[in-house]
Length: 405
Image 1 (cartoon, rainbow, N blue to C red):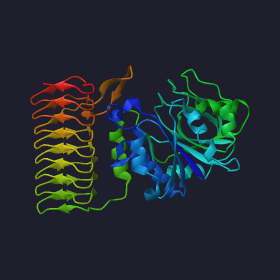
Image 2: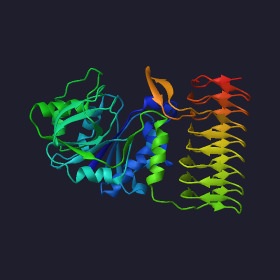
Image 3: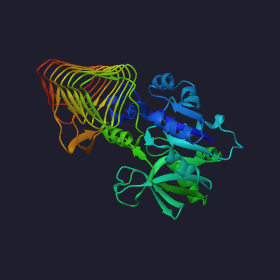
Image 4: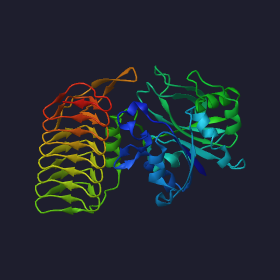
């Protein structure tokens, strides 16, 4: 069985993190979201993968190359115009043989585990099968109305509780789907949607079925949703190994995994689950608490306190800081006494839609420089390539290339 992974979009609602990378390359437990998907496919023996790429495609292609290091064979197709999911699938037609029985289609920006895939491929049937998952709150998601396993209707971005079966965007098709896509009309959003293709098939009496899974499926809609995904994956993962060195006087409790050439200095207090990458330096008396990941080539200053936070690669954080419930972009330089305020249920406006983040500190984009004694108020987003001089209190979102003096 082959798999088509849709990975061409940016993920606008995850800005500022997606200003410099696509959503599929955002890190969860120190691996890109897309890497978790590819691992789940490979574990199920699905090794022939077609990646539909577009926005910031070079980052994806440089990381995965031909897939051999990940136990798979990857071929790439570029979707230069974002014309919808059905259009993206149709682009892979030349790489799917007409006599193949079935193939998988997945979104590249959802967190799944191997069992999520096995639940679907072990029970798929009919002309098309949709993988669903049950959610109490379904606002903003596509949902499925079904009679048993037979799908009756697909409703996009429901605003009422019509159904609690969320469409995960993971499907099994046979090659006849390409003929159905050719007959699919363009949607009101100006795209060719695979859900419209499926509804067209349902209306014509074709056998469209659904499977419900209780296995892991997480959709990081907004940048702060990465924190929940990060915590979930760290807590369900098999305990990792400590490849670096822990010096005498450091206290390490629980599942703490470190990469090569990483040093944890005396007086550090670390409680897992925590993942620390390669070539990191955790300064004396630093405190790192659960659900934190620290990327490669990162240094944490002495007496700095970090909890429930994602720190990406190549970051330098000075001493005596406090960072909680935050995401710190790559190649950021943060001075001493940096503090992120945090609050519960922070109201945020994203793409002109008011939403509520959970407990949130701050989110910073890549290549940002922050001076000494800077306080960032809860829920503030700092975009890429910003410069904040010492002694400032940041109370408003900062756009790209901002300078705060």
